[in-house]
Length: 241
Image (tube, one colour):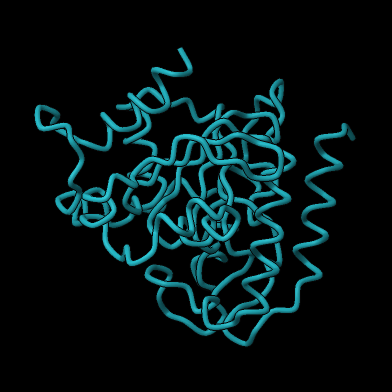
């Protein structure tokens, strides 16, 4: 077992020791193939020449799923069948982002135990103690990975991440929609210091509702067929090349 495996196992152990509220439960079982941590411990990426904690991009979701959805992913052996993965990988392909450059993880370390929905605001937000523990774990993930970029999938993970940065907390006051986010020029935070990493934070609409919500973006790319493709190209891909 290499040092990367040890780090993942230690992080998973911390996740399993969390005190979960009634609305959430721990991740029991493992998605063997590609998916988000903590459900897919290794992200299912076979090319481990670059360890998952040495990749340049963190892709940050909200929570793992509801119980039914997580069991489906275990049975499928991956999450690539889901609307989130289908839309996200299509977007990344258009923008030129390599999956092998990304560590896929969640800002909330659990499964929705009582909800039939796996979208929308997580019920975990109603428990302040649990959320603080998740914020601490997110900080540890960032410390281990030291990403250059974090792509937030929606406003909820952005708000969780902002708890680790005073600049982001102040910058997001009163922002509850993508239209307002863009109008206030907060789609990108260019230089955020968290856990020893200097990070550019980019926020996109959640992939599962991308076809509905992309129209709400007010990004300054009037000649682009897809403003989020242009956003990712300019803020990440062009900087990596």
